[in-house]
Image (cartoon, rainbow, N blue to C red; front, side, top):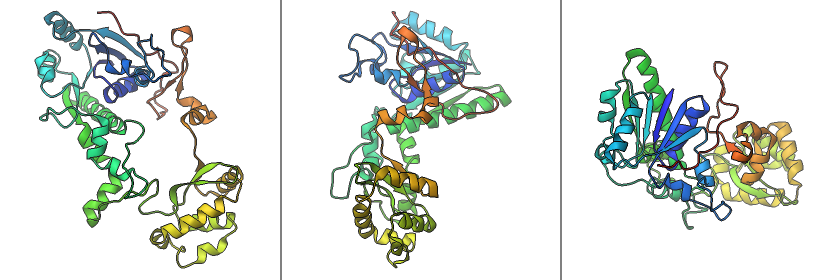
Length: 365
């Protein structure tokens, strides 16, 4: 499969790398200045490299071609490439693709089997550009991501709206590929960051729609399950979370904590009661867990099937043995750093790439 990537930043490039990991040939077409994320560097990035850590997050397995689509000759070259492509990924503001002569109508006229996947911020009729932080604010996520109703909202630490949209776009493309096998015809697939974010509200959105209650910030707590999500610190400094989803699990937790009578108290005997008495139970757990060894507690909870986990840094998470299957191997001196896969599923029918070419340096026009 041949994928022509005209998209930039995160959502579209994530989809491009996804197909590269499954064996597709992915050509990334960039403007003369390159994908803007090449310049999004942290202080730890190499300032002389055109491959920033952010760019590397989504651009393994691709080749790069620079085209200035303001030039007719470069527009013609893109039309030539699109004539043999299976999928085009685009993330132009509404109207810009047609202005450059690379919209769906122009490309599909020469290639009726083409699947043209278009990402926008707010839909094909709204020219407003989409930025993840703004969309997190506008769709409820920042409001919910606060320690309490009285504290400042915060955005999530990665661009989750972009990632939600990337998953929606993958699903649309895969559905269109299936349909093309039946009809021989390509399709236009349109996904907006805004609608992707709303779709991801899931149970929080359903709470408002079915009860009229507007969900309030609970920090990392869960609106309908207790204890689920808050962070506790043990005597050895280990931070951990509990995700106790059933009354049976809560009884086992209380036994491990050597407080079995908590499970028989009217305030805590059922999940509904625990939700109603959330602050009281939280204070009891804070005090008791602070008296125990965290690693020993986590080991015992795991042995007895009570969901709990250590709070790890990003580096600690990626250093875990179980995480190694999700890493793309470094490419010697060409790119001596590991990459992170976007494909997290496995199938008996096909494999994913054992290794990929590294994120490409910016090509010369």
